[in-house]
Length: 402
Image 1 (tube, rainbow, N blue to C red):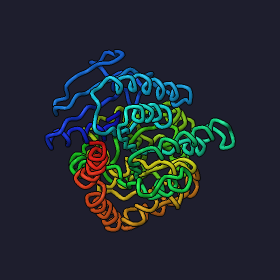
Image 2 (tube, rainbow, N blue to C red):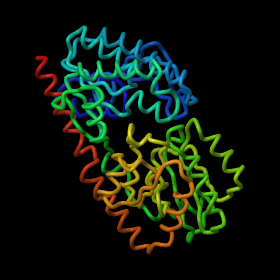
Image 3 (cartoon, one colour):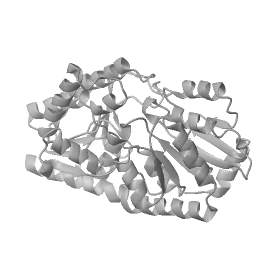
Image 4 (cartoon, helix red, strand yellow):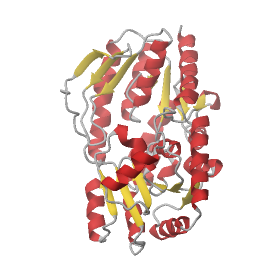
């Protein structure tokens, strides 16, 4: 297995089933792009995880800012060092790759072919389309065409390709020429107990942040990066600054946090509260402090990525307003679960209008929509539901190798 929190959970489950697993990953540094305290970077560091699997940490460049060159170096460096580590481990029955696309994944793919090891790739974001929709590269450029070609070669050469949505599956069938029999749609997931509503702790959080008990709180929680579209949320909130009982909480950090704080000051929005850092153990408390959760995405980004924070949002039993393309899986899940509303991306006016309209709705409706979201997530988006499906794919690939 290569990289990702998902890989750690898969390895833990394999050990529980009496099988062996090795996980290759980077030294912990997200979301700030800075090495966590207590760690020292080396080229390769081997250790035994408490769950029983072998953990190999590999050197990579860190990307503290969301810049194309730093992301490129992060991707490439882990691919080279991690790929070298894959060459040295005892030949596994299957490789599961959940890592940076094209470069790192391409190196892993080449090694898997060289060693004739079945490869299962998990697609979390689609490149180069994701970069195109963010305006970072042009679709007609050679780089874009080359990335798409490499991605197609990788995908067609896999034993299986796990995609997180039906939109992804259709794109890989249509644009990459992947045999539908090799595509497996398995959503990202969260532990069913990862977020549990707690109104008492939520009230304490409001008091700590000087938010009145009767305020209407809209909240964004997660990485404040380029693709998150948090600036659009701030611009929308500025249109509602005269509503004194309305507060916006932005919980998290990332490459755009300084820009967001500066924008809030520039627009003179004193009722925007920033919560950083946001420890994992405070997830339930922070999300429960909201009346409505906001999930913004930029441009057409929702067509090429699926924000995993949606699952935590739904588990918190709070209604959701998302900015997304109507064709996206994000929009489809919100509509299907009836947990909230979707408005177009990058349009502060419609978002502000929707927030104001939702504020006027009856509290019982907001509670009902929140409960609908939690019920949907528990039935479809938890570790208990999704992880066994991934294990089945890996075991099928490994059986072919054996």
